Length: 407
Image 1 (tube, rainbow, N blue to C red):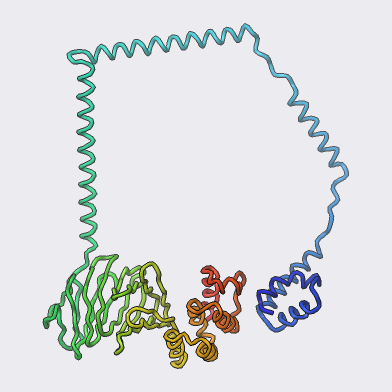
Image 2: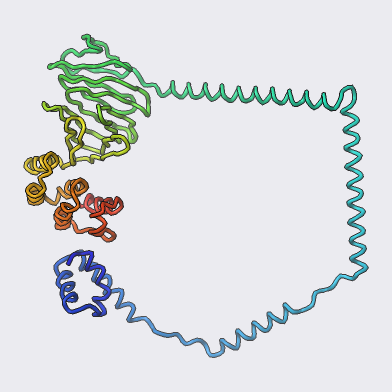
């Protein structure tokens, strides 16, 4: 019997309405499971408080008489007759109102007639109306043009203020190349390519964002240099990037996906097989492809195989044998053999890796990984086995958060 089944049956366990076998199974489970025992203690405390409550309340003896008395008094007041307006007073009031309305009508007619005479002095009414309409149209066009021009100037100034190129280059060792030519320039402009040789290293300062450390035999290109939108293309070698802004808006473009920096310190490097290794030391980054995005947290790493397939993230301190098993599984899908080995080699610290891997396996294999994760961290309240089997996003997120703060 698992934790979810015990939680469902606890109410009936207290009133002993379950069959003997189920009653015994729940009793044995809560003795072994600290999490369910806590739920049992909370529920037992609640039922104990219910027992102490009084079952009835006796109202005061005279309450019915008081209510009846008050209702009778209210009804009597409501039924008192109102003063009735006499017929003579009503006729006087109507005639007075009629005279008032006739006087207002005469006044408005005189004012309208006077205005018409003033308008006709030297001009026809039609000509006067047309001229005014033309003037109004010209005024509106002028205002509209002025607004459009102001918006354009404002937007241009805003974009000009965001420009932060050129970026500054500082050489640590050796000579670097800009656009294929050896250079000592300290400026890195938009559309420039920067390459390091096998004996050179450089540090690039990205204004209001952070720094890029370019290791030997590395190549990048500056695509956009603008506050809120800094983009480079990474072609080969190894980078160490540290961003010091809460919202750095820094992006690295690869052939098939983008790396989005959400304020982190990390390294990105190509290996000899054209795979990309990503290691996040602090903060987190996202790997975005089309409309989907995978987040890599601090102290986690992953491989981008052939620059296309993002592997399941694993902890940077995970045993090498465990990492190799996970990568082998994603290549071969040999579930019968590899999943058991992965489960046996996993530590409690590797539970989030198992949870991410669970999203990629078949429905049958999810059962294996679900049990492995549950052995380390039982699903919290609101997360069910069936929900995880259906890969419900809310339940996966709740379980992820429950595990993440504990490791």
